[in-house]
Image 1 (spheres, rainbow, N blue to C red):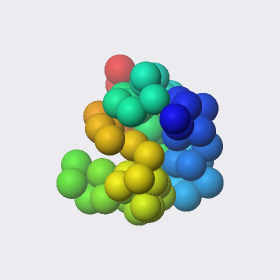
Image 2: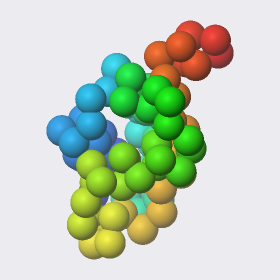
Image 3: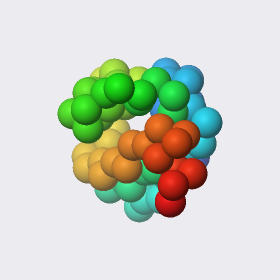
Length: 78
């Protein structure tokens, strides 16, 4: 079973992030990701970047993922 720490590591290895927070139970996870890579991107484009960082793990290890994807400016605005 994959841990929240592993999911965080996978995301950080595949995407430049200023902040990543992950909570979950081994199959279902909720993540907050703050990244400059999200600037100028739609929500769908941001999610695709995260899915690309996770790769095959989305099919094999992670069964559900809820994402909050923010630019540094959006995160600062609260």
